[in-house]
Length: 199
Image (cartoon, rainbow, N blue to C red):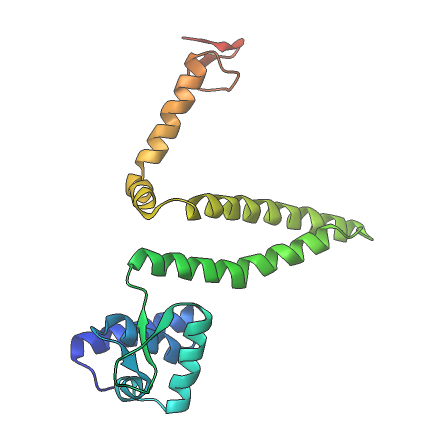
């Protein structure tokens, strides 16, 4: 690699992490170089920076474009294609999550729905369908949550994520308030003989 040590360390790490996420190592490294560059870069820059064949860089660029993680940038006086990443880090994170969901979660939901619509032919299949139903329910819950989060403005999303464990405390407070107001839920403050009565 023909990169400064600090940048090279990040690019190498990003390539390793990319391979663990199911992305080709070269794709991860090419993206890292584009992400850290202070100017648009072309394929020649990437070949020099990452130290791989031009054909590998071309395939990496094609893959990154299909993920909508990079975009073409016109440079006056240049006939070559130049690339940049999205400017907003939150837009990048949203795009990554969206693409992972579309490529990995959505197909799994489709298969689960198809299998759950079939009539089980044996007790073994009936049990398997019950397990699939549980999995389907959890994934549907998570994707519904994702859809709600995806609609939030970035500022609201940052505020929500910054709350951390405070969300759990708010839910605990809500549960206590529910019991105090005579809810039918069982809590520490509700008497066994009358769920609506509090100490």
